[in-house]
Figure 1 (cartoon, helix red, strand yellow):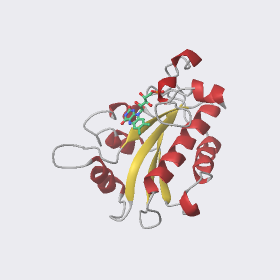
Figure 2 (tube, protein in one colour; figure 1 turned 120 degrees about the vertical axis):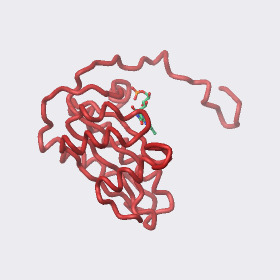
Figure 3 (cartoon, protein in one colour; figure 1 turned 90 degrees about the vertical axis):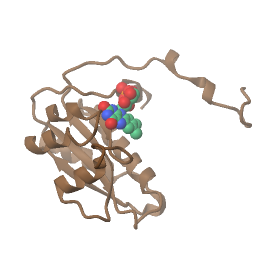
Length: 176
Ligand SMILES: Cc1cc2nc3c(=O)[nH]c(=O)nc-3n(C[C@H](O)[C@H](O)[C@H](O)COP(=O)(O)O)c2cc1C
């Protein structure tokens, strides 16, 4: 597992190669296997592989989503907040598992934040996406995860880079 965690990097450049149907299904399996508070499973997902919609999605944020138009697919991660008061945590775990499952199958991925982000001065990224994908008002959008075969390589993290300063022993501020 640590090897996977060191190797997983945000990939923003993707090859033209389409993703096999089975691999997309496995990404969804990983998400649906995620733990959630009180097993509330408040999440919902939209798999997006339509080029025009991906291109529109790349305009959903002021910055940080431009590369999405070059991705072969993205998975939108949403939740019904009535099902869980900690839906942000629940969806974040599901999204993280999608990223790890992607890596384990040779796919690159990147998290694109939607919640608390703007599309422009008048519109939130969430509202832009809700309008684009006909998402009901009561559903909240956390993020989307782009996936595809990588067309860039990033080096894995090294043990030496880990910031142990944030880890304490028994009491805050106390180092072993
Ligand atoms: C909550 C969260 C929000 C993020 N939002 C974006 C985003 O909107 N656009 C983007 O390109 N990357 C986004 N990222 C990816 C981070 O920039 C990336 O994880 C970080 O720079 C560390 O790089 P690494 O993933 O290669 O380890 C986000 C990651 C997380 C966990």
